[in-house]
Image (cartoon, rainbow, N blue to C red):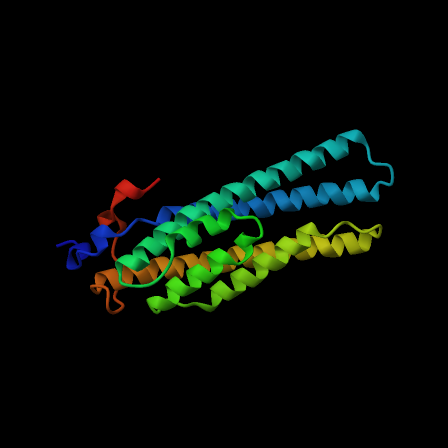
Length: 211
C-alpha cells in the first residue's frame, strides 16, 4: 500500500514542492543579476565619465533585476497561498489572502506575508528560526538596494556588497523555511493531522493544483 494512503488528508493537500524549487531558482537568478548589475554600476561610477554603452548595460541589468524580483514575488505568492490552504486543511490558522497578496503590495510585502506565514507555521507547530532570518535579511537587503550611491566609490562598494550578502542570506533562509513548512505539513497529514510522521513520496499529492 502507498504510504500516502495512510491518511486521506494527504490526497487533499495542494502540492508545493515544485513551487519551492521554482522560488529557489528565481532567488538565485535575482542574486546573479544583482551581482552583474552592481558590478556594471560600480564600473560606471568609477569611470568618472560614464560611456553611453556602460550606462545602457547598467539599465538593462536593473530592468532584469526588477523582472526577476517580480517573478519571485508572484511565485512566493502562489506558494504562500497553497501553504496556508494546506495549514487550514490540517486545522491550523492563517489568511490565504494576506499570505498571497501581501507579496504583491509595495512596502506591505516587507511585513504582511511574513507575519501570516509565522501565524500559519505556529498553528501547526512548524515555527522555524529561519523565517525570522529570512524576514530580517530580506528587509535589510531591500533597504540597501534603495540607498543611493555616494560620491565615494568605497562607500558605494560597501553598500553594494552588503546588499548582495543580505540577498544570499535571505535566499538561504527562505529555502530552509519553505522546505521545513513543506515537510511539516506532509508529516502532519500522514499522521492524520495531529502528530509528525515521515514524509511520503510526491506521487499521492493532488497534481491538479500544480503549475
